[in-house]
Image (cartoon, rainbow, N blue to C red; front, side, top):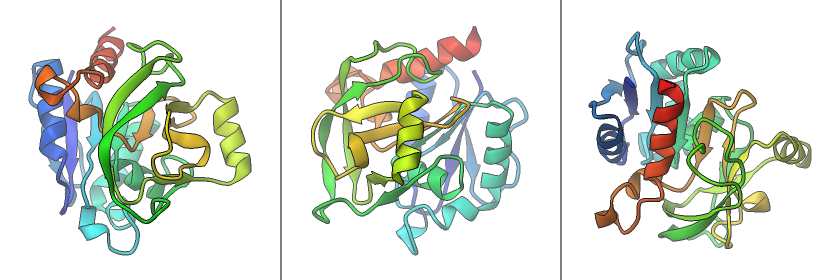
Length: 222
């Protein structure tokens, strides 16, 4: 599987994601700078990493969403290429219109950095094929603006369409309906605030995140 990781000024989880992808796929991903206008022609998967793109000026992800490379990311997603946005990457995907809703300042206005318990809501997607529906897993979070919000109609629609991929099992940041990660309507774009790339080997304290990337690899390679 040929992968690409988008890099913005202020990204600080791009290497974490690249290492996780190399461990699972056996190939180093292509690191794509935000000013580039094209992705590798043979890309099978795109990762938009966490961090503080453009210093989180204006709104988290707002400036990164207007980078030249995001036009290519959107075009690839429209063709069915799987795209994941983690933490700041989730914010970028909502700002770019690839996912509905918005990520707001955390309830309590505090930065949250700790392992959290998640429930797998949808085990039928490209990204969750190696989990069981209803399974409890643990990913770490590290964010200040992870409070997912959308209007009631949008929330009802994504719930009804099975597009909530992960849900917090505890109160973390005030997110509507404890939503931690959502899919687009085609199921090939996932945004989530917790960090699966930080739990891919036992030395990290857990391997629950590794199964996300392994399931994706198996599904795409099939």
